[in-house]
Length: 350
Image (spheres, helix red, strand yellow):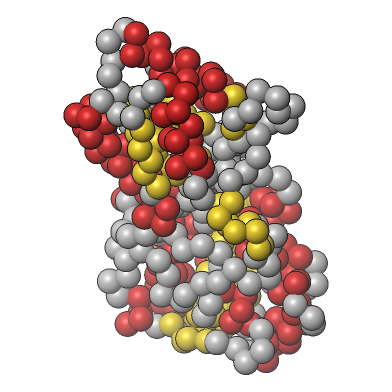
C-alpha cells in the first residue's frame, strides 16, 4: 500500500510525532510506502508537492515543533476544480489511503472528500482544543503551559510596578487556552468568547481588589473575546481584528483586543495598565511530554484504522481511550467551554 500524509492549517506542537509513528509503524510493521504531501491541501493541487518518507527522514523529529511537511491554509473547495484536482492527484500518485492531520478547516475538507470516494483518516490537531468528537487535541497542552508560564512571569512585573497586566492568548471561537492557562496561572479575571462581558464588570473586580489592599491585577483575554465597551450597546460586543480580509476558510485575522482592553481599563480605573500579546509563541517550539504521547497514540491508531480498512473516520480521545469517530461528528460544530468550568473560573475572579 501507499499511504499519503499531509498537515494543514496552523502549525502545532506534536505534528511531527504523528508523522514519525505513521512512518515507523506503517513502514516497518506493514511494509507500506509512506508519501509526505507538502504544504497541506495545496500539495495536492496543480503539480503535486511530495516527499517520500523513510525511517531516516523521521529520526529526531519527535521533539521538534512545527511540521517537517510544511503547512498552509488552503481550501480546495474555494478553488475552481480544486476537489477534482486533489482527487486526480491522489490517483496519479497511486495513494491508497490519506491521513489528514489538522483542525476543523483541514478536517472539514477531508470530510467532504470522503463523500467523493477518497479513502481517508483524520487526526485532530489544534491548540484551541475546539474540535468536537474528542476530549483533547494535541498541541493544546503545550499552548496552555506556554501561556501559564507567561502569566506566572507577568505576575512579578505587575506586582513590582503596581500595574494591571492584560495577557492576550489565542482562541478565536473558544476560550479553552485562556481558561486553563488563566486558572492555572492565578489570573484575576478571564475573558473568553463563550461568555460576552461588559467592561464595567471587570473594572469592578479590579477596583475591589485594590480596595482590599491588592495593588496589581492580571487579566487574561482570548483573542476572540467579545467585550461591550459602550453602555449604549445592545449587542454582546464585537471582535477586534487586525485586518478586514479573510482566508480561504472565511477567517479574519484577529488580534489586538489585549491592547484595547488595557487602554480602557487604565482610563476607567486610573490604574496603570499594560498589554502582553503572546501570539504565535503559544504554538511554536517543542511539544510537552503529554502532547508527544497523545500525538503518538493518535498516529498509531490511524495506522490501525488503515490496516483494518476503516475510512472516513477521525481518531479521538475519550477518557483515556483512543477510539475513532465519524469525521462528520468531528467537524459538525465547535466544542465550546462548558458553563461549569466558566462558573468555576468566575468564582475565582478578584
